[in-house]
Image 1 (cartoon, rainbow, N blue to C red):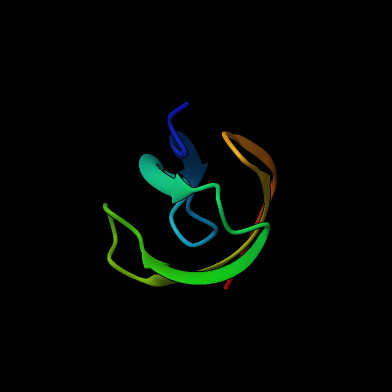
Image 2 (cartoon, rainbow, N blue to C red):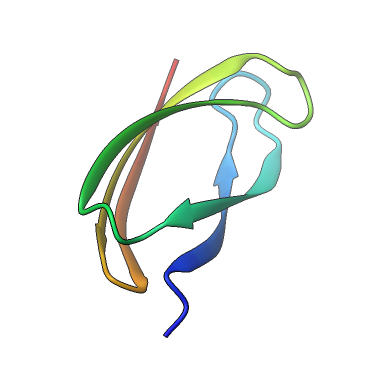
Length: 60
């Protein structure tokens, strides 16, 4: 089973969609990811089960 899962998020600053990779072995995590388009920081709150992303919330 692959525990690194790819998904796409929408930047709350510029509205562009870009791909990210999530390690689903951590059930709850908070990450700061820079937008691949506008480079502004996005705070991601992520809930996972091994191999599955349950929920992602994107905030400024």
